[in-house]
Amino acid sequence: MQLARVIGTVVATVKNEALEGRKLLVVQTLNKDLKSIGKPMVAVDAVGAGVGELVFWCRGKEASFPFKREDTPTDCTIIGIVDSDGHVTNGSTKTARQVMDDSR
Amino acid sequence: MILAKVVGNVVATRKNQRYENARVMLCQQITPEGEETAYTVLALDAVDSGVGDTVLIVQEGWGASTAATGKPQAAIDSAIVGVVDYIDLLKDE
Figure 1 (spheres, rainbow over the protein chains, first blue to last red):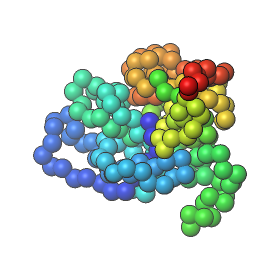
Figure 2 (cartoon, chains in turn cyan, purple):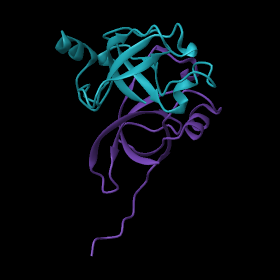
Figure 3 (cartoon, chains in turn green, cyan):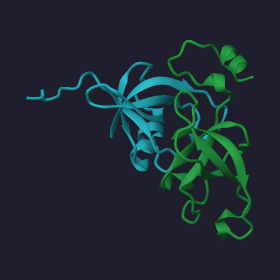
C-alpha cells in the first residue's frame, strides 16, 4: 500500500461489465513527506474517495478483493481515506495543526 | 520480504472493513547497511512494531493478509511480520 492524492476522475462509458458503476480515479503516489513520486495512475475506488483527498491504495491481485474478486479486473484499488494531511506521522516534529496551516 | 524502517503511521477513519483495528504504519525501505532508499510503503502491523524499528515487510497478498488479520483474502499487499534485532553482514574484503 502507498499514500496517494486523488487528482482527477476518469470517465469510461465502454468498459468491462464488472467495472459498471465503479468510480475510476487518477491518483498520484506520494512519499512520506507527501511529495509526488512517479507517474499518476488510475485506481478503482472502494471507499468513496473524492478529488483532492489523501488516500492509500493496494496493488496487485489483492486490489480486486474488496469487490467480487474473481471477475473484477483491477490491479490498483483505493482502500482507505486518510483523515487529513496532519494524520500522517512521518518522523517530523510538526503537529497536525501546523501541517494544516502550512497547506493553506 | 523487504527491510524497512518504521517512520510513522496513518490514521484513516474511512477504510476497507477488513482494516478495522489494524495499525497502518508508514515505512521506508532500507538497504541491509541501513541506508534509506526512496521507496516508502504503507504496511499493516502484525507484530506491535513502533516508530524507529527496523522491520521485515512481506509483500505477498496471502501471507500479508493472514499475518495482519488472521484470515486470507483481504485487500492487503504489505504487512510487517517481524522486528529486526540486528543484521550480520560479511565485511567487504
